Length: 299
Image: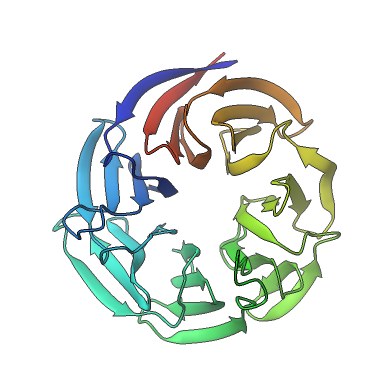
């Protein structure tokens, strides 16, 4: 198995990619830090079929957009517009509507189309409905480490009704609202990334950048560490494929059933693979070097 580069998508020179998210219809959202003058977009939507820019949106100058998510409907996106403001962008009109965010320093956004609720993680974690009403809140732990704050992160599990919650200041596990259902065994206190699929929750611990997984019954899956190198990002691929992006710029593929490495290739030459996404047989990787690559996986 190998990866074959298809296209390098243009970004602002030197703009680190901070997050990727998939939309219906083979579209990918890309977020990063703007050009510091407010005149260049820092959230872009690319059509993977045409490999063209479909829409772009703006946050305030000097705002680092660390999270981006599909929104309420197939043509809607959500991203931080400034310190305490979220924006909902419409891909058809490329207009955006700002609304108050009860969370600052946003690091994770996750929308559940099934129950019409948005998770927002930052200095604290909240859940809000489609009308913007706050349903519940969990305190963060932002002040314990002011040099490198690692507040808890949250994501929807595969049923899009329960959540996986992990990080400093919380008891890691599967939750229903604020109620802990099943704790994760041996979960790290600090994490820099968290993501779920229908069976597993994965997290990258800090320090060490080690990738581990848990079943949604709370037990650790294949106890131990995935990947030979320090991991900066990861994504669940098709079937049993797991993709890892390393701090050295490599994209690695693993069989998540066994932990066997299937391939490893240097994609980003100057820095870490900061974000990954997989759409059918296409893989998208964004780097701290400011490049965005589109490629295919071949046997």
